[in-house]
Length: 401
Image 1 (cartoon, rainbow, N blue to C red):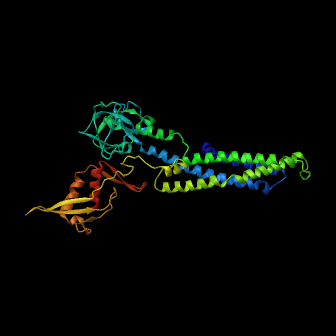
Image 2: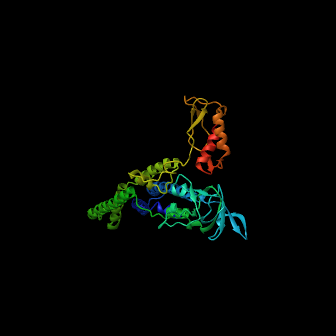
Image 3: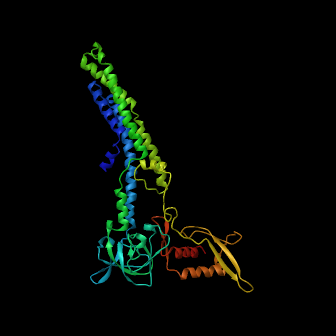
């Protein structure tokens, strides 16, 4: 925490301000000033710097908490072979070499290699890791691809992904930071802090200002050397101190002490707006970097799309006596939440959809021939799926009907 606080003061302008405040206070004491007058100017400068540091610390702490939430993608429990029988243990107790059994709805607790198939197929939702919208079929055979990427490793189950169909057994090959998900988290925590365009400009400005102010202060002091012996100062040394105070006052006046506070406030407001849209901002200046960005290269699933599937249209055969007569219905709602209405071809809302035999039977088939589960998470205030996205979409259709 203290490292984070001190990091907020690692700026040239801020360091110059601190030095000016300290010198200003010392000279006030040397001059015999006491009480509020001696502390007024230094305290104002320190208050601005403290506010600046507080905003920075709060924002970065919130960002680190959001990064720690990546741990939520790790499974809590696992069905493990121990002492000759399968038992449910905390996922944190897994070690490489453990045999684990997984089934529909299971969150994979570690990186594992397939050793035994207990159903005709095993399909896994890897969208969280690879961005693939469709589930991936896993197999026992090892891959022959050179320099295999995650998509090529069809015999590996990755930690944090979810089994959507089938059952299988696998041997643990990696836990914690030695998993694909763990390496992503480590990479995010390990990223080098690169100076943003704004930071570079402010540092350049600070260096330039420091040189100019130092030059002017020395010049003012040197120009007045002849006045050091002025009788009104009461001696050469007192005269030198008097003009040194004038030079320091000039330096403090020239430094824009409000600049760090204004910049921080602007970036903090930007961060707040981004946080409302669920963006993780690790440091305040990165908001400004995003403002300088011209091209963003992104994958689609889970980034530009929500990786949710829904039924939008239903076409049914109403009659086949003389010729096929079809009816088309539109369904509103695009998420896994069972909230939506059914409209006929004329855009009229159906008050009681089950009164249509065709819709009723489609709903029955969609409900009975379906292995997926839909559940409401009160903590996240959203609906979550277990199983294939297509089957979940049909499950939601059933609820809407």
